[in-house]
Each structure stands twice: as C-alpha cells, then as structure tokens.
Length: 507
Image 1: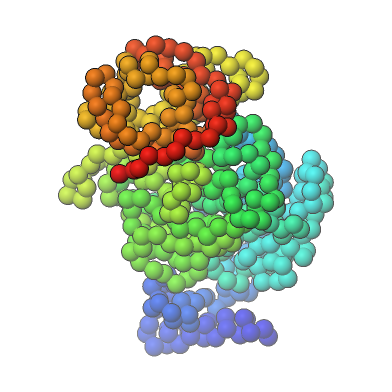
Image 2 (image 1 turned 90 degrees about the vertical axis):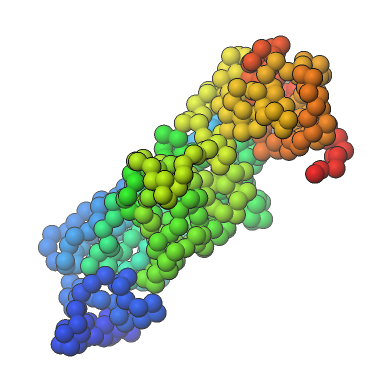
C-alpha cells in the first residue's frame, strides 16, 4: 500500500472516530483549523474506491467561464477530450500572434473533476499543427504529470489514465521541448479537483489566468508579431496578460456581478517566467486558498501566485462600480496589458462608499467598450488605404484613455493646471516636428496657451507606438476648432529616431 493511500485510509479512520465521539464527520474542509491537515482531509471512506456508474464526459469551458459544480457523492470515471490547436489570434488591437493552445483558447479549457475520480485523458493534436505537444497536469501523481504518456504528433491522439488523489486547483501546461517556448505561446490552463463535499456555494465563478508573452515587436506594434526567444530567456516580456490577449476582460468582455453577491475567482499563472501579484482594486479578498491548496487566508489585499501556480479567491460585492483586476507589479498592468474589469451593478450603499468612479484613471484606453476603430485603422494602414477619417476615429478612442484625464474629453483642460487643446493657439504656432515630439518625449516647464500661463509636467507617452501617436495628433488637430491636418506614422518614426531634447528639471 502506498504512503498516500495509507494517509487517505488514516484520514477516513479519523472521520469514523469523529462519528463515534459525536463530532460531525462531514463539513467543508475550509472549516478546519489552519494547519490541521488531518482534520482538513474530511474524506468519505468510499471516496477513493473504484469508479461507479457509467463513464462521464467532462464539461470543458473556455475562459472566463467555469464548468458547473459537481454534485456527485461517489467517484466516477471521467473522460476528458482536449485538442491542441495552433492558431493565429489577436494579442492586442491590430496585433496578431500565433498561439499554441489547449482547446483553441488561452488559457486552455477549464477542467473540473472530483477528488477520487478516475480520469481517462485523451489528448489530440490537430492535423494542422506544426509541432508535437504533450500535457503535464500538476494535479496528476505520475511521471511528468502525464507528459511521459502524452507526447502527441500532429494528427495523432494519446491516452492515459490517472486517479485524482488530491483536491486543489492545479495548473496544466505543455512540457514538450523547448518547454518554455510552448508555455510562452499559451499552452497552459487549470484543472480543479473538487473535494468530495464540494466547494461552498457562490453566486459567480470565473476563470482568470495570467501569462507573459514575448514578441519581436514592441508593445502594441501593429501587424503579426513572432515569438522572440531571446526576450523570453532574458525574462523581458512584451505583454503580461489575463486570458491571453489585451482586452480579454474589459469593455464588452468584462466580468459581471450584482451587489450583495459572492464571487469566486479561479486564478492561475501560466508564466512561463513572472510571479503574479494579483489584486482587485476596490475589493478585499474574504478568503484566499493560497497556491490552490486547502489552507485558507482571510482579509487579503494582494496574493502572490507563482509561475505554474494558482489560487482561489473569494469576495462579496457590496457597492456597484468597476473593479479593476491587475498584477500589482503595476507597470505590467498599465504598460503591458495585465488588467481586467469586474462590472458590478446594483443600488449604491452610501454607508460603505460615497460613489463616483473614474474608470479612465485606471484603465487608460481600455476604458472604451472596445478599440475597434484602432484595429480598423491598423488594417487600413497595412492595406495602404488609411484615411484621415480612419485616423480621427482611432485617435479619439486612444485619446479617451490616454489623454482625457488631464486634458478632458472636450479638450478644455483644467484651469490653471493643464492647458487646453481646444482652439489652442499653441498648437497652431508649433512646427509639426515639435508637436510630434511632445507625446514622444514629454513637455516640462512654462507654456502660454490662449493667453494663460501653465507650468505643469506632461510625461512622455513612451507606451504609444508610432501609429498611435499619429492617430491621436490627427484627432486633436481636427477637433474642437483646431486648424486641421494629418500626421503620419512615418513622420512620427522620423522624429522618434532623432535624439530627445535634454530634459528640464521636474517638480
């Protein structure tokens, strides 16, 4: 008898002794005292017996959705069918990337089984794939977590079986060499092994998984971007993303809930390199199951999720508004894409929070419901059909998040603080090169606009690409009574290539 099965039987014996002493034998494992592993393993004596009933085909879901909870009180044979698909998809607006996926999405399909189930795993590799693949499930006890049994060439299928011995939330990923490249291309997901008594009921469950991506082009550089092995080895990601692409959890794709509801997030980190500092701005986690295990922490602000790890976080929604999901290594959120939104609707509760929300402060251009105009402008530029109207529409969407917090959506600025862009004599008097240099290199020191003096600091918008700078400037020049004109991507590139002016002292 193996050591693990001996421990299981010992735990079952403790349950029986608890029944003899008048103590309840059931209950949620989360109610056990922290650190008491034996008490936490509340396992029915037959939980690890042979599978009962007819085989069950697992329900697999694409992110951010989660399969329904399991209500069986017996172990079953569960068949999982998962296909590897290599496909080109957007990684950001106007930017595409060739992902390697489990089930056609990044992260891969969410798998939900019960502790004690016997899982018959079928891994298929699409005939269109160019690479062999396999799968390593961290919830598997066996060589390679299944990788040793699942090496699958394009157009082939592999099968292996494992018993789900340990409850918890586990990462799975491809482990074919070079392993880091397969993971970096999106080959990861989560498998939940529910305890026999199930998880506590909540109103909403969502699937969120972070990953770092390495492209040859800069952040948001338009067109198709190949994988960059050197950046990956140096651990310098171009993007850090939730659910595989920028905007996957914002705008029309935001998670939703109502006030006075409970939310459980199954959060994973595929890596391949970075540790996640997962945080929801404006919420405190009532409960965190750190590293996907059974020990609970309470009243947590930010939880660390290692590469190849996971966590279950739960919280209650008290007031309406937009709650921003971020990696609190904060430049990753605002300059590499690691942010999402949980939109909570319902009546206000002034006793808890006074109200007023400014999404754009946190979201930048992702405050827009979508960035379709940006994507359309990128396609038009690639096709050689870009018009000034295309640029104005794209520039307006980008301006809303990038510039409107200071300069205001109507271009009026803030009196005595930020200069207006509307009917601006400053814009009319400057050379084209100087106008372009302002978003590229920033502007510090006193300026006079429409007869009023301003002395503030505009930081360089170095996160913007050449086409985005061109579109924003074209929008500004053609709005609010300004003189008009069109700035091209090529003009921006020329100014960017010039040495930046010496920075003035900041205050």
